[in-house]
Length: 203
Image (tube, rainbow, N blue to C red; front, side, top):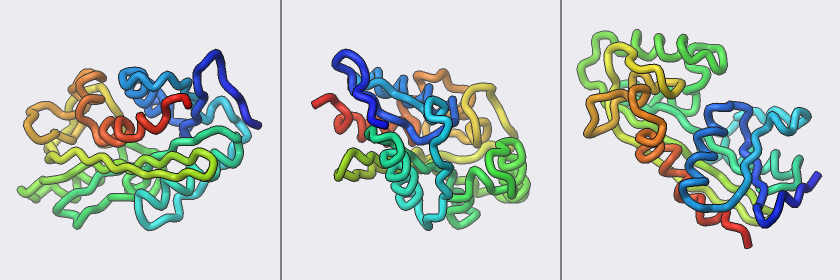
């Protein structure tokens, strides 16, 4: 199923059907001048759903990237990311997307974390992202971390997931109150994908 891509541009698949992530990574790669064309899994409707059975962010990102690279015949990027809360001993961590019990229910996950921290004054947290690239026999992972703290109530309409309650260090605004380019400049995903970007330049 290999696709050579178009006129001098390398085609790379991001192993997600999350349109937010595809747009975010496309912006980051364009800003980094990689010259690649990014495809999401919506362009590959028969691509397998890869269970996140790993015990770490790196395990899960590699599982997804390997499976999608094998299926498409193209270089594949996958990430696993989440929120690590100091008072919850680093949780929800790899369970961030399904912390409330149902995968992808952002509001329920956010509400549960706020409820668990209702009486907690020490509200330190960090967003963590591990991005993996699988390109033939080459495998590479990079990590991006954004330290911060958690607000007591959601603020802002941008972003997704826990963005409305996460306040990066040095900021008064949540990541959901930042403009997309401001968020990309500091986000955990932005940091991870910028570190991966040099590996994606066309040969």
